[in-house]
Amino acid sequence: MASVGSVLSSPVWPVVIPLVAIAVSIALFHRGRSRRQLTYRTSARSLLRVGSEVAGQVRITYRDEVVQRVHLVSATLTNRGNTPILPVEFEQPLSISLPGTGKLLTASIGEVRPADLKPTLRPDQEEDGAPRLMVSPLLLNPGDTFTASAMVADYAGSVLITGRIAGIARLTEEPDQAGRPWWRAASISAAMATAAVALGSSATAIVGFLYDKPAPASHPSAAPHRVLENPYYMVRLPPGRPACARFVSRDGSRVILQVKGRSTLVSVPVSALSVPRLRRC
View 1 (cartoon, rainbow, N blue to C red):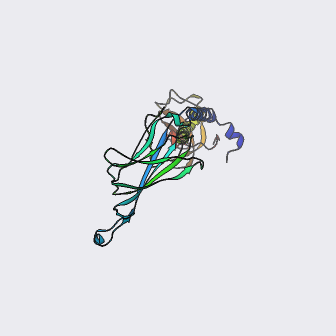
View 2: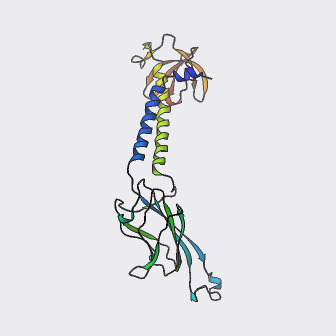
View 3: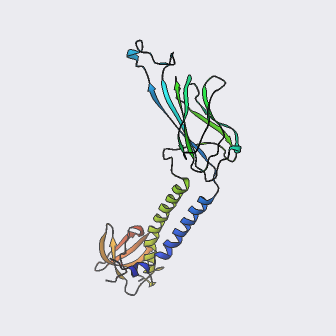
């Protein structure tokens, strides 16, 4: 087990620390930028349907009117940006259209966040008679969200959400991984990339640290590299096997090692080489 002193004095840190600092700076820069985004997510589920085997025996009515293919359709809208959307920035109300659907039965506002968010919903119709819901302009702070729900008959399977808002080119449909702030996803990606680079750079830095003077000319690729006067160190070769070896040369992403007591050379990827402690053997 390496001591704290040996870990802190490792030559890896001058490589890793700048990379981490750059990644954090990029993530904070993007997080601080003004971003305007209104997203939506839709869902629909069947409530009542008469099977073909009893179609002539059972009727579903709503207010004394026969209805078929009754569905509950929901649309959740969320301000995913980091700036408020003001009521005066709406050129027209938000529209939740149901193209091809036969009849709107009920309309209501479901879940809201925060609790004092009060969206106003107004039933309406397209020119072809298809039902739609109009959401009046309202203040949406970053993270504010609400769900508009409609019970419809003869649902056609399509929901179209449109709106004109200053600074927002178009409304964005949320992917399956909805709910994660964009800057958090970017930060995680940057951290993963930094870790990958750091792992690769760590082995490279350690290998570079062990070079000191020109290697023996017996190996043709060793001339441009340097090794220590006593070049044998404890290392771990893939797949984790300890060995006493010296660094003979570097060939791109691989290093050439000579295991103590053997006359043959071993070629190992830099990323697969491990030097637990800088200990001679």
